[in-house]
Image (cartoon, rainbow, N blue to C red; front, side, top):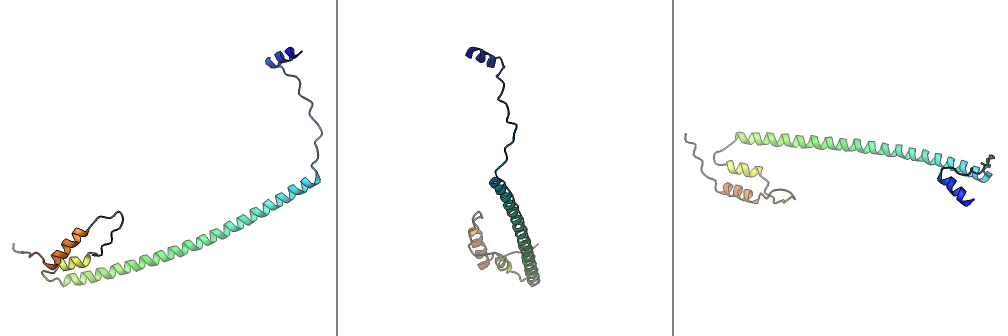
Length: 143
């Protein structure tokens, strides 16, 4: 009998499954109550989460508006400062005296040795400009 059942399973024939229990068991009252409370808690949590999301979005929107406002003000100040510097430069450009070219160039240069990471070493250029400012090379404008 064992060999017969073994050969049947090898051929794809299997013994009939056990009969299904047709009657569905009712859940106990405590489990039903727990499921309802769990659903209610999850809905409350979801509502709270949505409320917090909206609050955070509002805060982020206000911060972004403030940042743009400050950024625009900074740009306006920089533009005004650049315009004033350009007007001053043009006004001084009209008063050019021969032999003062290197002094004007030295005014445009930043002589504070701020070695920023990733920037070129310009110390030699600075020293040459200062040297030319102190003892300029005479320019011959003979044509």
